[in-house]
Amino acid sequence: MSFPLFDAPLREPSQFVGFAGNAIDSRSEKRPDDCVQLALADARARLLLVRDGRLYLKLRDGVFDPWHGLAEAEALGAEPARAVLLGFDRAGPVLAATAGLEPEALPDGSKAIDHRSIYTQGLLDAAALGALAQAAALLSWNASHRFCSRCGAESEMRAGGFRRHCPACGADHFPRTDPVAIMLTVTRDKCLLGRSPHFAPGMYSALAGFIEPGETIENAVRRETFEEAGIRLGRVVYHASQPWPFPYSLMIGCFGEPLGEEIQPDLSELEDCRWFRRDEVRLMLARTHPDGLVTPPAGAIAHHLIRAWVESGDQG
Image (cartoon, rainbow, N blue to C red; front, side, top):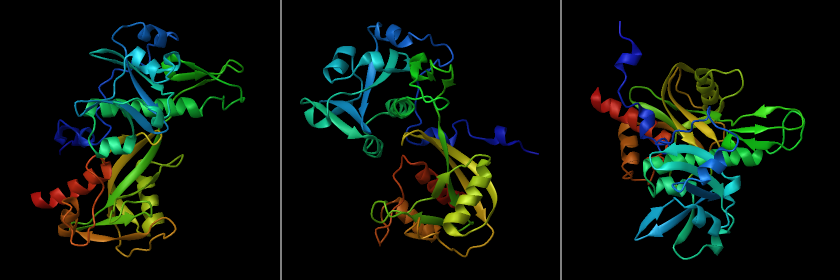
């Protein structure tokens, strides 16, 4: 009898998706409340600067650099004392702060680019892209949880942004991650793809939805597939996950086996939903489909789910 752990590849599929290359040691359990000040006192400290879903980048000789020294961050209107401490890498402390300057006011040689474009266009290496996911999520959580959910008093950032403390009632609050199930329903020769109205022209993708309280991942996959496509699933297996900083989600990718193939789409959620045969999906991945249909970009976990299924047919 085989055991799944020992049959698994040494590099799991999650390592190949966008935003998954974070190499920072967060040291989240060993942080004094003055850890931000201590990190900023280190001459090696580097900051990521974000504002309104954009990362501030320096453009040098055609290469984008997301890292700013303390003086550079202050010149762009950031308040380093209000930064969050992401952790430490081989080069030293790594922090993130909100930029003060509007994108339109940036000096020559600096650009503010939205997070999605950064990963779809491959502007950063895997480690920097992973750091961006952590920075965006942590800053967003601190900004949206300024007040205690127990008593309503204003809370204080502690542990470099990994905790918020309420001085009024003593409650401690910790960063959250919203789990999202993203699933590809497949048979041996076709898969189910849907299209939302906000997708780019011609794009079809896997279905997805938030996991609800009290649900297992597998049951969330079954529920969302039935709600969006009217298809019941039997077996469900996990494939990979992806940090998704919009604003602080974790995409949990799975495959599901249909118990029937008749689609009853929820047209309030989807613009279209249908079965695609493997050869057609292969053309969509290659961007050579005669009708201009495509799958999500390579950094998205939906792309990896679709590609893994397509390539499984080549191995059969």
